[in-house]
Length: 349
Image (tube, rainbow, N blue to C red; front, side):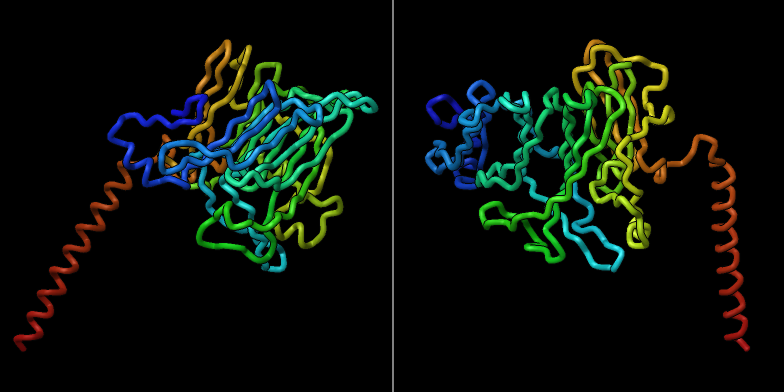
């Protein structure tokens, strides 16, 4: 626990030696929405905090609307993305990356929304960009090396999604471990925007045990439905004119409007009102992600982004399989006995 004077209090007391042994390895940050100031700290050996970096967004008249880090339960299964020419585009998988969304009043464009990607350990500004004539409410997801956030376009009067994906390039800086203190390379950023046909109440990505299953993004709609869209539809590398390479990579052609198929509604005919957020969690099976929607209504379900590839169906004939296995075991035992008897008879000849 940290007090306002910057001192560190360890509970229980028996863990103080462990914390002291981890000095200069414990980092944390604070984000004050009222003042618009973000501050990073490191814990020293004498159990005190030392400021390491500071980011003042209020100096530009901006207000922090959302600070989002990656889920601690998420695992990166593949470190790269195979391209059509069989080369590998390595992901920028920074576990300390923060996504900060701010908005500000603009004298020319009325409103503007800014995105900042900040390293929580070093305070390094990885990427930033500004969108004019858009405003919050902003909902976002941050997963692996990609992120998606929503804004309201005042000019077109519609909800838009901006998708970004970060890559290190064709050469990986460090294949064994990532360190924010070793000046990581500046990533390549792919960006693309999409039109969402309705407003958004909340967003969340699916999480599985090993990160192998295809990623889906869950959107809570004002109508009370929860729609699951394949993350491939939000891929910023979707080409305008699909060619042979895009087909080999499985990239669909770019279309501005995102579809909302009725078969993608995970809560079926159960209308959810007053939703405040969505929580996803991995289960014991790689194919299954647990989803909990909370607010005025509470709703829990399971989703299968890549179908139930590691589960047996309810109509699976277990009795027949058991009989077949028992028959194979019996046939194997009988064949072994006959083979031993024949070998013994030939040895006596």
